[in-house]
Length: 573
Image 1: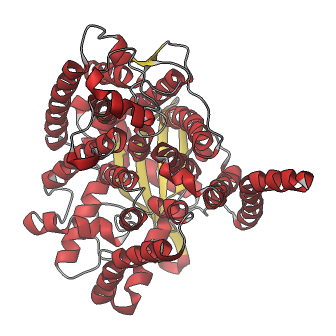
Image 2: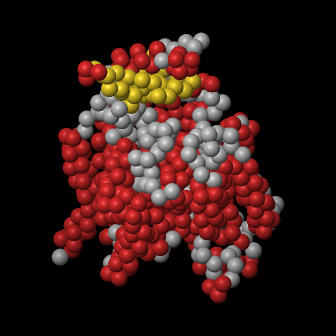
Image 3: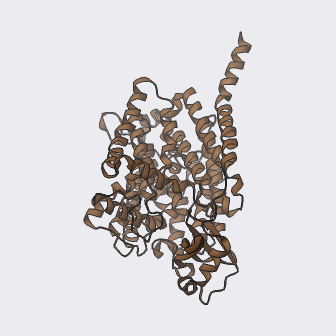
């Protein structure tokens, strides 16, 4: 009887891998069969000729030496023509197809940007200053690294820190190099997180947080006080650099313009002002969330102020820091007592790691909605052990930007009976008023208009992606199929071992792996998306796994330490 039992266990253990592989293979076959590159909106020769001869484009290229040109369709009517000097982009020109008498295809330039004239690609130039970036990087390593140095944890920290190089390369217009470097780092972090989430538990080697090792004479209370001061200083820097940014990204203008349409009784889909190309490509909550700001300061063009939107990005970063602190510090002890000093240290280190994540300040200074999404993801991780509230948060995040919808299957997978019904009801409760808003303002075609506008995200050219940067667009469906396989494997694994969901670090790692997979498989990537994964990374690979402060714990905390071994100050080796 024992032999079949062992075989059954072996099959059961292999079920997640087998299910994920099967779904990935089927999806890859289907996606490869239907995959085709977007057709040029304007014939390449005509697009380049139009770009070179339009006054706006000539002005952008005047006195500039360019060595190569690249054309890619943005949609069915607009072609993007990019001029390069060696590996660095020099100018971007948007060429739109125009009807001519006799059914002759014509073209006209609708936008031309001299990229070399821009001080920064997005946001506040202060956020790109080497001294500030070095300071943030040092603090990030200090709050996430461990001793001894020969720990896998420190490799994770180094790879996460290397993502800053992608921002710097993008700043100096090395677009392809920026994407390829980030893709390599993200792939490593994604694989590490997938193994952390779905693999067998592994014993951590003895290690000590670097911050503790560098302050051996300090008692934990003193470290906590200084970390609180550092958090206040960082918060002030974030608010000053973020709100004072002179250059907001087009995503913020699109959100505010769409919100302005909403408060005037119009859906943004198909009713956006000219200036921001495809500014209506986001779900309805993106615009509804900014509607109160638009009521106070309407935005109808890129000449209007979006300072309120910049403030939202800064506040969202601070809210994300609070959620990360709560996630890593854990709940208060029974009876409403305050957390132990060890818990407090763990939470503060995690919050500091999020706020010093080097790309974060530059992203905040753009005002992009991606920072709000990061705060929503952090909130969902904090609520993970309350599946009804977590499902509601993920549904709201999905209606804000689509990616978090991919996390809902793994949130629902371990649920049964009333808990599953409650979570599904919560998703419906979040979705119903948003669908109602679409119906009220757009009638029966409101939902269709939103879906049609959002379809641009799945049909645009893939030039600014890992696939376009490496000229391997034909392999993109395989990457997308692998993400579907990962989600399937995670669902099967969590259905088998529901107790895994009680380990918030595992679930944060799983969320990180899925979000990284979505970014790598997408048609478009920018360093702004890095903030999606940072809160989950701080709660998974970079979180404390045990407490081993090497004798620095006060005796009064002994009972707390013995009852909460996962909150102890040393980190996973």
